[in-house]
Amino acid sequence: MLKMKLLTVLGVTLAATFASGTMTTSALALPDISIALGGSYPLRGQFADNGTTQVKLETTGGSIIEGKGLAMSGSIEELSASGNAELEILGVKTGKTACHSQSDKEEEVLVKDTLALVPVRLAPLEIGILHTGQEVEIICGKIKIKIKGAVIDTLNAGEGELTEVGGKLEGSKGKNTLTKYFNDEGHEVEARLEANFGTGFLQADVTVGEEIKIKALEGKMFEITGR
Image 1 (spheres, rainbow, N blue to C red):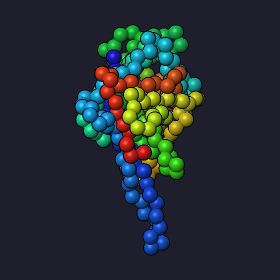
Image 2: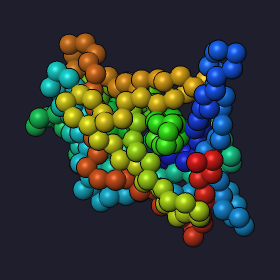
Image 3: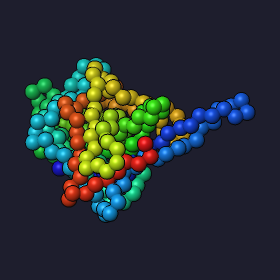
Image 4: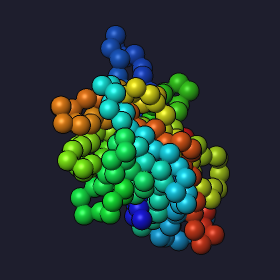
């Protein structure tokens, strides 16, 4: 099971002004996830699909690895600028060959990454979820596949008090739909995922067949502020 630390996360927006003939930038609101009034930490959440969600990674060279099933759970222990995540992908294969990550069962892959809310557009402000993964090695028979880098999924969250947040990863032919975000210095940064199927690292995309919704447990509610 994924043990995801669902965090308060970092997001930054910019204000561009001209002064003395030069442009300067300054950080504005910092979106975060906080316990709703009257609640207390930890805030726990989870997602489980009973082995139905399609997950696919494809490189620009056409190499593909696929899974069917995704399990996630997590908690916020305290206010924080970022958080850690683990997600477990089931039914993982490349072609007809079963795959697994180190120390995991056949057709199971565990991915660890950090999460942050980041601006993907400034006017109007749009927030995405940045996933920066640790490099993972996936064993598929005699082939060892290495995956590293970062991806961005969309954020689907209403206003006010919430019981869940959603995110969706889309893309094709080695490139995700969202590929750039703004860092805390106001610079546009590329989020790039890469995979090596034995012939060198190539750009890759990850797509998930449905929106992943992390639902708060124990009847607790939370808010995303600074948007």
